[in-house]
Image 1 (spheres, one colour):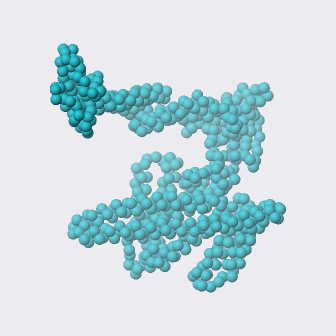
Image 2: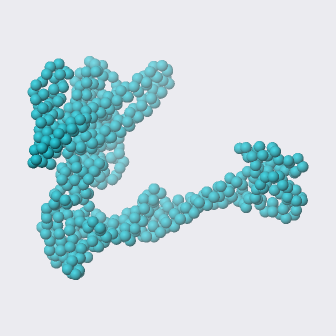
Image 3: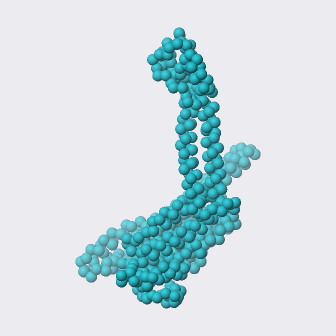
Length: 589
């Protein structure tokens, strides 16, 4: 459910503002209402972002440990930034040095000093780098030369003379400033230092606990300062005014604040234009649905809390799409293994584990009623097959599953319209429910039995008439009819949404057929190759079913949520709600 809230206004003495806000933050239940152009404590915000960035960076480099030296958050951030600058400089130098190596490498290992000594003694050494075609045109018959390297169509060679400079008509290459051995040594030194930087990052990562604590404390400080700076001064700065939303009764909130401060207060019900924050509170059986709802959008405070409906409808859709007992048991085993390995018992982790077990149960249930076990084709006389509710092996069985998918869609969309009726007092919504079901019975009578169904026909007409006459609340009859006709144009969307639930059948039968295909491939390999065929068949079956499970999970999640967030939300959900963020001290939690 969405917890109702009241707007509470406090008026207190300016000199007591700091202490009052500290107490309000310690109580930790109110959502502060900030002005549209709220003042932000930018220095604290930058400090917080610095800590968050450092924590994220170091979390990728190591894990929390027991550091030998104690450092505070500021020292950790400064050290990380210093290492970051050094790392960036080293990487830049490394790129430049590797480019230098690429230019020096063709000349081989030589001593730059030796070449300079020879030049000083009168032996002129010139270096050239040309392509093969140019090299073949050079007049080198009367020149003492030596090819140093010939690779990739590029030739590096040197000429030697005791006299004047030789002019070959091509640009002479400058003598490298460093030898190959010197360049390689520099690269090794840089790589060693980069490795040392990584090790220092890992050492800093041992202080992640310090950063987490600092993040919580600075967040508390940021929220406090933001509230302090935006508490409006009045009466020549003698009093302050602060507005907030409270999910608890006004009297209980005042009692928690105590009698140490001088202030007055009053509460108001939310107005039509107010943007009240949304706090969803559900029993454990429905809590996991809150996380699913938040994936798409927070409900508006005018909405209902869709968490229970989204949770269990998603579980039904997910189970129907996968619908295999063998896959369900594998998922159940995997979930059990994850819960044993993941030690966290945070509220989020607990909700996720509940959701995973619910989805596993749904897959197992639909696998049982569909007589499906790793896509194995069972004998039609098998008692399990005879009592199965879903049967993908025959055309009649598939038609039955298609009808069930459409019926699920009709129930789901009808529920959406009833919620719309309850929330918005939209009296045209029941008309759509009547029209949907009447259309189903009319088509069923004609297609399945070849006969008319006058009652269904009249029901369809009556439903559409209700939509025409009651979708609008306009008191002007002409405008009411115009808006009613506009509402009737939604008939394509309504029936399109209902038919969209056929994806449950399509994805379910795809899961079965893919499993059966890999079973056939594995069986064919086992039969055609003696002994080793069993090994190859095992590999095919393992990889095939792993792939199928992965695809089925993707389809179950994507389309299971899609049917809730698009087809269902379209008719009953406003969304775009404001998340409830209590003014509290998270460092003390």
